[in-house]
Amino acid sequence: MIIPAAKYLVVGVLGTLTHLGLLYVTVEFLHFTPLLGSSTAFIWVVLQSYGLNRTWTFQSKKKHAITLPRYIVVSVAGFLTNLLVMFVMINVLEVWYIIAQMVTILVIPAMNFLMNKYWTFS
Image (cartoon, rainbow, N blue to C red; front, side, top):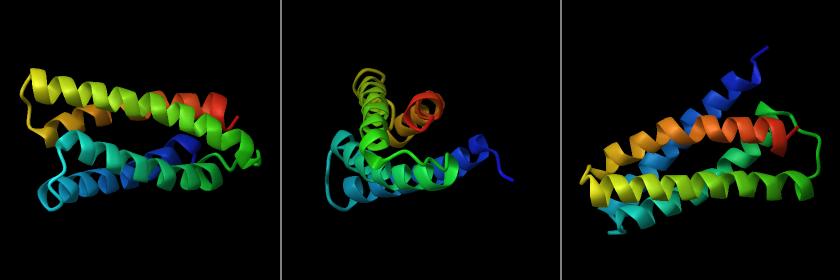
């Protein structure tokens, strides 16, 4: 039996790979700004991760009417954190956008796991 934290890690790795891939495609091929590309990728990954976390990670039996709004609140908090870190790293510290995104990957997942485990799907 895989524990929820390990499942969350698997979903997170899949989400991270999806996010980085979509970020790269939107910036390099669709000519989005890095912030718009990151935002677009983040929204896609929220939807992808909600389904996987609800059914596989936490095996929640709660109705979508309860879990989805909570998941969105947690995700918006993560989204805003993502934007803030990306903005500061790119515009203030002048860090390459891919490195900046990697830094957010160190901050957001732990915060989201705890909020989702103890509030969204509990």
